[in-house]
Image (cartoon, rainbow, N blue to C red; front, side, top):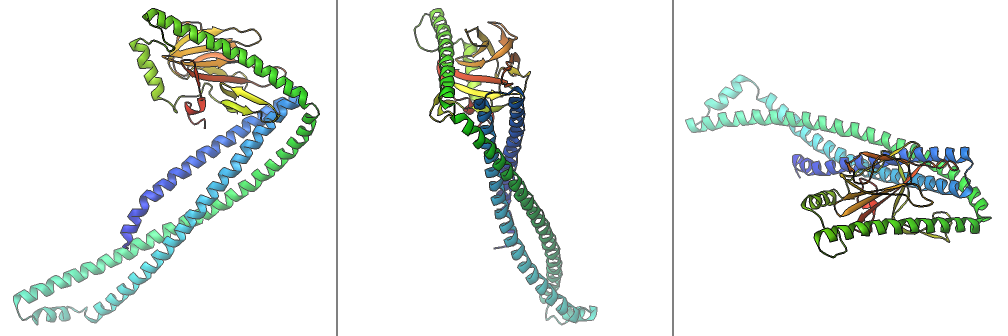
Length: 399
């Protein structure tokens, strides 16, 4: 295959590799930032002398992120191994082609020296039997000179390309060595965290029944709050139906509200997070408790651990549907986006009131910080009418 052809075929492959590299680097940076935030949570837990369950949950979170970081770095190393292998093949092929070109060029130079005098070239033309033959010989001499020039240019171009591949190979090997060192350090950190976790788990097992009871009580409180939110949404749906003179289980939307809902849905997967900085400490859906494995928990949304004094912000343009003041719970803000509702739970302060219009990323309240544990956490939920949606599918890069 001609060099220019296989290099042309290589362009999209290299472009894809660069995109993949950038994606992995972005994921790695995000994991590293989350680990920094988790370390802050751990320091806060120790400082506040939080119960063992809280500390075990946080340590488990760090183990998960540390393990994810190791696996991601292994993917980067494997990708580099593939690139290094490809580079070595390219270098070997270029060296072979370059050697052939140099050999051909050397033979041309030797032949040219034997016939380089002006007299030889002139005699070659004058010995022509006809004007047409002389013309063809003149054209041949020009073509030969052009071919020699082209061969020289190809040699220079391939030499330059070979040098680039060699430089890339050196850089790739350095990157690989750096990643191996990073993985070795990450594995040591994971081993240290795992040892700490094992010690904490032994402490937790002595009071597992008590902690399981705490989790169940917390789940009951959460279920009651979710029922209240569901009731308020159904009331709003009923009011929209009454106004329109219909009876359905969905919001009856004005043209303006319908356009807002369509715009909201069109941004699925690209909505901003409800906080500027945070990490997911509890996912959506029914799942086993991360520590007390005998207990099942259910979440209609996600829980985000955030730095103290963090403000909750609306993920999209909308209208404040309600402010929920539920017994035993911190204030909750419900924002309506057509037939979509977003819920912001566990606030210490609320900046908006029912009926207010809000813009995307507008601060709507301050997230509550638990004085006993030092944890600051926002519980975020998203509904289509009354049906809970997985926020990870809607918020930007939450997966």
